[in-house]
Image 1 (spheres, rainbow, N blue to C red):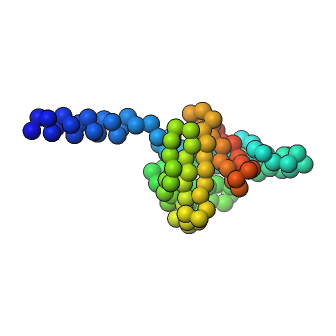
Image 2 (image 1 turned 90 degrees about the horizontal axis):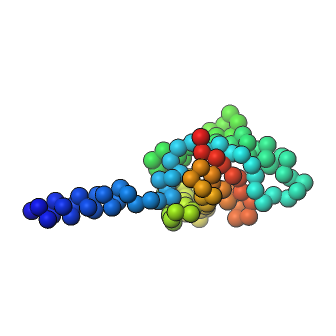
Image 3 (image 1 turned 90 degrees about the vertical axis):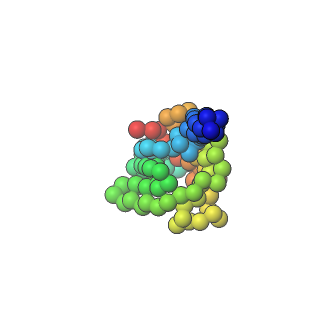
Length: 122
């Protein structure tokens, strides 16, 4: 019986200590700049990016742009220390979203495969 309890405790600790990218998404992120945009679009793209905020709580994500807000549930498709790929229930699995971690406080959201928005954790 003691071995079973010890094994269960070790399993819980291993799961709790596992570092995952999805857990690092938790919290609020503010857009700081657009990435990989054409030179003539940089100014407008950066202005748009700076009005954007993402909030991740549990399995829910909210996207704020100016006064508009959309929220929905998401599911993680791929997850490691450097990136997370997820899809929302609203957009479905045919529209995955990739978030790449530059460090613990900076992510890049690949908006359309090439262009992206860089966010900083608040």
